Length: 214
Image (cartoon, helix red, strand yellow):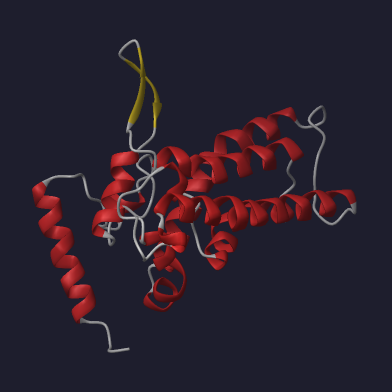
């Protein structure tokens, strides 16, 4: 419980922003796409005609999602957007399954906007459903409080929770997903070590020192 959350309760706050606001924009994007396909505005194809393209879409999807997430996440940490939009999500320092889609309405629009590629490149209705399910249900795993789902001591699901937990703790690191190289390539990767914590804190000090006063 905390006064910084709607209703004074983190869980109810997160449920509200996820189900009432998040599902609204998820539905809006989905309805818009199917309306566009039905009216010949968005390009599409039949699975029987292009099975190879269908499979290629499924293979490319993880790369598309992780790349888009990294780029828009860096954008959301731009001070004007962070203060007015992304800060709502970052009230969740101790995250739970409902925290993933607990966002400002503007952030929901930006976060789900990766589906707009289907309005430009020919796609299939099943592909966009997979896209939306991955985009909107995936955060429940990455914010769930566990890193792996084990069955008989075998890892069957990588939730990557620790990677994203570090982002919620230190803010200016781990903008992307653990399976993508962007954080390593651009120097924002935190592996949980003490050395990485010192480096990230120094980077953050320099970042805020160089920012002009608001």
